[in-house]
Length: 288
Ligand SMILES: Nc1ncnc2c1ncn2[C@@H]1O[C@H](COP(=O)(O)OP(=O)(O)OP(=O)(O)O)[C@@H](O)[C@H]1O
Ligand SMILES: [Mg+2]
Image (cartoon, rainbow, N blue to C red; front, side):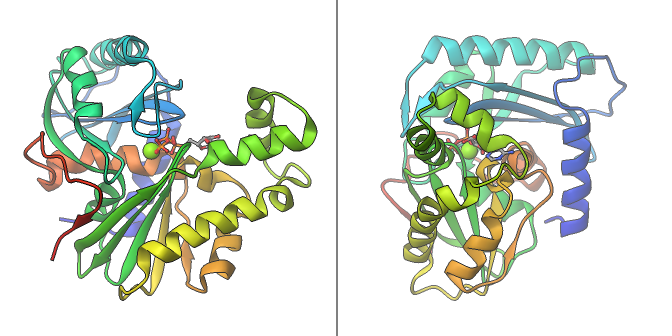
């Protein structure tokens, strides 16, 4: 059963409230575990039997880029350490997990890392399709703007009919900021994340325009009446408004956009989506 928007936002607020908290809690099993191996960060989310977040761990780390693992052992180490923290916090063994991958890339990119971290992969699905599966949607496109890529899933009557991904994301915004101010990429990342930092939105407006072009290409020919955003880049103040005017469609921005995709991944087992861990969907995924 898909979640209504209010309940999804309650779970996102809960996940944010417990971010990187290690203190033990009492939980109701069975647990559902999701791992999001992104371009910018690794995120592990654990839900209890009712789908409520009970552990959320995030580490900023560049372990994959443009569909390639750039730091395999780094990713495995981070994940093992997060699993260990989640095990101590919940008092439960963590042996199974769901994960995701950018549309059009090989799902083994993620599943190999989970297995190396001693996790059995039970569910795997492309990133925007995970979010599409979590929410009640019709004639909508889920747009996941992460660190490295923008992924779109078009949903008609609860069913994903198309998904695709292009390599433009938050990283490209940071590169523009770094180039303009003559600062390092890391300094630009920090500046970008300061709420309402003056001048930043205007500086990155052309790159947001490029993201809007990508989304427009993805949704062309489909009956899309609204956009649902996810991904950390959507935290940028004013980005949703720029996209709305560029796309000419209503745009919904969740609270905690950084956590929506991980919540959706962790929810795959609860919604029984993404079974069959090793299918490579090929360059684009068309489901009729
Ligand atoms: N407050 C913020 N303002 C602007 N950007 C932010 C903010 N917080 C995080 N980001 C950006 O969000 C991006 C990370 O988002 P996310 O975790 O969704 O990406 P990812 O899953 O690692 O990447 P991908 O899905 O492309 O592989 C980074 O580029 C980061 O700079
Ligand atoms: Mg992502």
